[in-house]
Figure 1: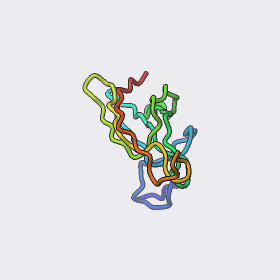
Figure 2 (figure 1 turned 90 degrees about the vertical axis):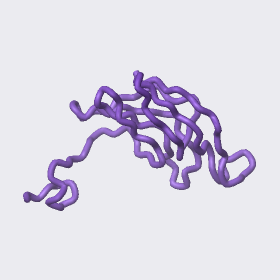
Figure 3 (figure 1 turned 180 degrees about the vertical axis):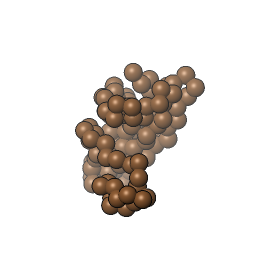
Figure 4 (figure 1 turned 135 degrees about the horizontal axis):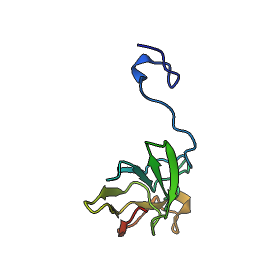
Length: 120
C-alpha cells in the first residue's frame, strides 16, 4: 500500500485532513444528518472542560466544507443527542459548567433540560 501523508501509515489510505474546521472541541456530539452531512454540536474548548458550548457547525463531506449553524439554547458537554426521523436533533442533559466556573465552585453543574435542535 502507498504511504499517505496523514499519519505516515499505509492503512490510512483514503483518509485525508479536513481544512478550515471552525474550532477544536471535545466532549461534543457528531450526528449524521439525513442529508449525508454531519452536525457537530456542543462540547468544550477548555482544557478542563470548564464550560459547555452552545455552538454548532455542519460538515458537508462532498464539498469538504464547514458552515455555521444556529446554536443550542443551553451550552453543554457530555450530553446525549440523537437525530429524529424528521431531521431534528433531540439533545438532552449534560454538563454546563465544571470546577471553578460553577456558581458554587463545585465539580459539575448539570442540566436536566431537553431541546429539539433544528439544523438549517
